[in-house]
Amino acid sequence: GAGVSQSPSNKVTEKGKDVELRCDPISGHTALYWYRQSLGQGLEFLIYFQGNSAPDKSGLPSDRFSAERTGGSVSTLTIQRTQQEDSAVYLCASSYRGFQPQHFGDGTRLSIL
Amino acid sequence: EDKVVQSPLSLVVHEGDTVTLNCSYEVTNFRSLLWYKQEKKAPTFLFMLTSSGIEKKSGRLSSILDNKELFSILNITATQTGDSAVYLCAVFYGGATNKLIFGTGTLLAVQP
Image (cartoon, rainbow over all chains, first blue to last red; front, side):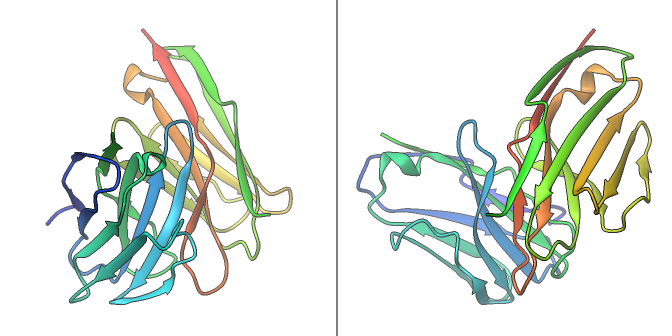
């Protein structure tokens, strides 16, 4: 596609449920990133993929968070046993290669009741 | 601790005014600094600055980096209501990762 596509755009779920967020990067972009944006906060790095490998997972807040990327394309961020503090906008970005401008999707707004 | 600090936090101007947004940083192994504009959803890329003292321009927007004093400015001349947005500054963290460290942004409101 022309840009980074994320789904769903909004997700409301109950505390304790698992959620999966999807990111479809720009075609040909080898690098993919997940960030989280909470109200009043800057974007917080979660994880970086180069191809299907994740050289940097340092931003994942806890072991309830995991992510994978398959075929060097689509990525899924999974949050298990969601907590209220997980409520945020989750943004995905991709770049042609490392240290190039990252292009962002519209994000998934996650609300935990 | 690596950090990116933006100022002011928010700014209200009238159409036609010129604004200057500031970004200072302390990041290990600095590589580049980027500016983004965020309206409602996706941040959109504006500039990437790597070399000190070289101005980048796009229409009414321009930006420059000082990597000795560790700051950058984003200038917007002849502001329009469509410039209203949050402007984000981010720095590439050095090493093997390509992660960006973001400031909290400057909220710009341009009034008619």
